[in-house]
Image (tube, rainbow, N blue to C red; front, side, top):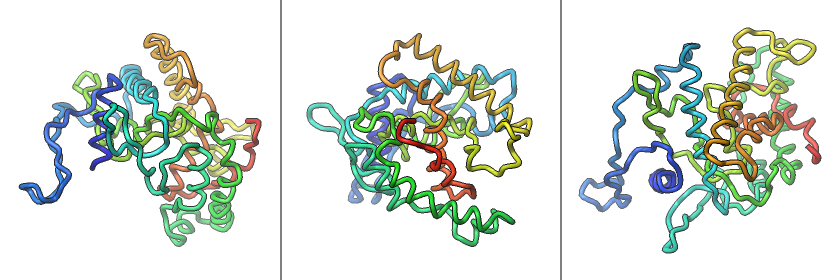
Length: 301
């Protein structure tokens, strides 16, 4: 709860993202209620997950623009270390604590990826993985097992910016964590408990409504011999991602976020996007050829 409270304070101080106002926060169990609690603003609107599960074509521009504006603002909050936001110092800077599940705080992204290669846990049991993998169970299980060692081997050069500054990452950014009005205007971004300061490639993951399984990790029949998606829905998703990047570029120019490693640049870095997304899917326990995402990644990428 402390991380969410401090993150919301940081986001409200450093950006224009409509995060909920917190009216009361008490983190000690000896209070009058008997447990830590937080009272925050309620947005009077519609949950994005209900309105945008299958985004109507006529509303894509307004929804993607709203998401892009929020992500650009979040991404451009810079922090000196990698980890969760746990407090505020007397000089106004924010304290960074451990990153979710792997320790820290970290001064370099290489330290983080090496920690992930040791501590990160796959989100499904072996039986669940094999059941989901069907006739590819042996190959997929071997690929899952090879992923963390490869992550450790390549940790030094996965990120384009090993020493920061690090970027604010919502952790689960997308339409499911947003509230819109009836005209699809964004009212608020919710659920900051998974947020942390992260390297560019993690902070720049596409909104969840635009995510795809990395092609190298996916089943082979979803793509043709040229590597192009064969499914109409998947083709549309890739086209929507390109549209989203174009919107992000326009917003960056309008807001003056044109220096450093830009969000649009990170979104266009396909290989690092796929690695970051594979790490998220690994934590969730999705079946896939994880090691293939890293096998072709070299130091000069």
